[in-house]
Length: 285
Length: 285
Image 1 (cartoon, each protein chain N blue to C red):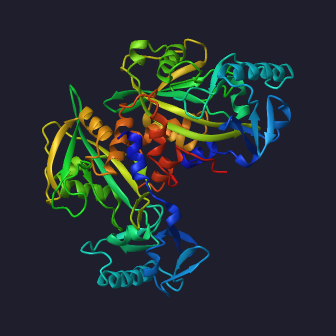
Image 2 (spheres, each protein chain N blue to C red):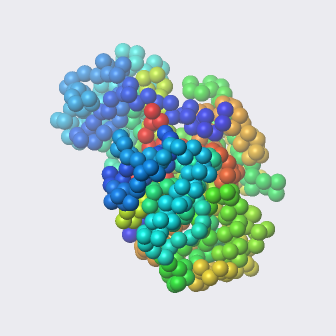
Image 3 (cartoon, helix red, strand yellow):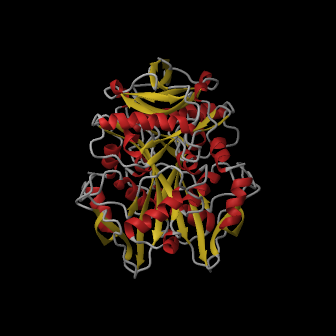
């Protein structure tokens, strides 16, 4: 592996397998050609190489309700297995814009809708250099069990600010008290286009840094983390560079951290490709 | 002005006015349609919507020599006014790759060749927050006289590493001694596509941060800076956001600094557009 390999691994989408879908004239996401047979009129109609949500649904609330009813049908037909989350995610290409509608979390990648999760790197500044808090995901998590993760990371639901959500996740996932979590700073954003089977994640991760006091130890409050360990940044750097031990998209947040903290040389042959690759506006195919 | 306005102001290129030019099968840059009449065979021939350098020039050295002779002709014809620099810049789309050839600095934007200058933000960490060293360009500089600038910035010649060049520029432009300059960290890169008349700059700026001791004061060693002032970061933030007092591309380096140092909120409506806009892989139109 290399940093560029991780970027390529995240940006594995073949967009030619997908068609866009629209709410009015606004592109809301992408639908895989092999998932499209599950769609049905009048909720979705096809024209001009794209899918269009029923235009008679003219408010966010009516769209969300109709989509929810449809997703429940798909669920009853076994589409989502045991993965239903009962969490509403916003459907929008720009998080700050009012969402076009909301959608159950588990359906988001089936409809190629952009998600906006906060990812926090918690670090300690010691005399011998930076150290990072590295959690290992619980072995009982349904997704990516046992893999290494960012210090705190979570999905971004509708109706909650990204910073407020991050503060909530800090408490739930790492027992970081509010007064400490409020010191986290939004410092970057990483974008990638990931495909997993028929699902597409054209996601943005909002990157936060949080310098933690030397005497603070995070621990899992919600059972999602198996264990937290404090690693010298060089060990994190080498583990990211050489292995796939971290959950795939978490590597990108850490690579961005390495760049911002000066751990990648300007004369490194990959320097520019890494910096540009971390914010991929279009799929690489 | 706003941060997004500065990004749009830098990314003002109309690429439809340009055609690419190639060395072998590699795109080397872009030539404005209205500058193209100055080109002549056999050095440049036109086919398939692009210009092609004489393929009989099959080494970097022969290309560089032939181009140099041609540029001297253009200079004799008054093309570059008084701006000849006698500095060789690399012709390459990726700085770490061996350059396809070198080219006199003043000609680089006429041939739409990517330049790779280091830009350093020198800052002081005080109890009342970050302070940045802000130079005002000499009023006798031929370009952007009297405008505000990044603490240290320079062109990137061929045959010198970016970091070594930065250290050299630190000494020349701000009298920052080598031992101090060596602590500078490459932390980001900002890319933009700027057009000025017939000239195109598809440039990358390599961003360095340097924390300076409170008792150090930079001063101009080479007459290029009128004066250095130490500003609270909030004053820099507001000056960038609200004015065009900084040289156009220096705003982007400072906006990147503001993001990396947590001065832009994750919930700011412009947060993602700013982060993505700072690394523009293609012109905006």
